[in-house]
Image (cartoon, rainbow, N blue to C red; front, side, top):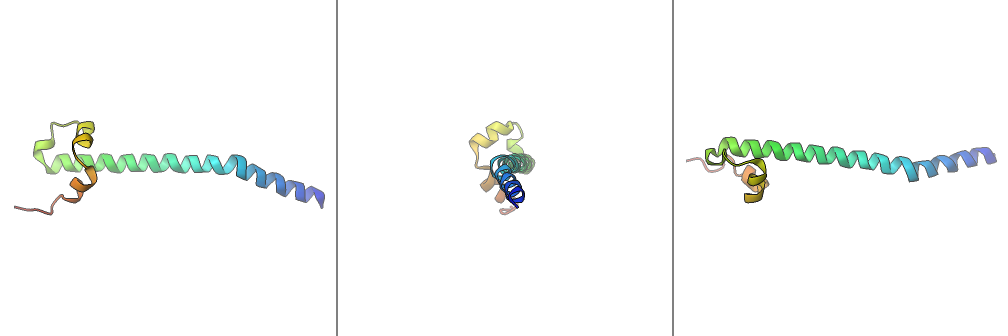
Length: 79
């Protein structure tokens, strides 16, 4: 009986101190990669839609414009 209790206590300590933080770090890295890909896609879409912005690098585009708001405006104002 004591052996089972010690085993369960050891497994819960292992989960809380080692495994949970590792899994959380993996999730955070995956989320950061996905966010970067989406932002890159938005930058390319902005450069394709607005011909005057083709000469800007992606970093310059991020510095000069709010990527989300410019991306959301694509196709709204047709002339």
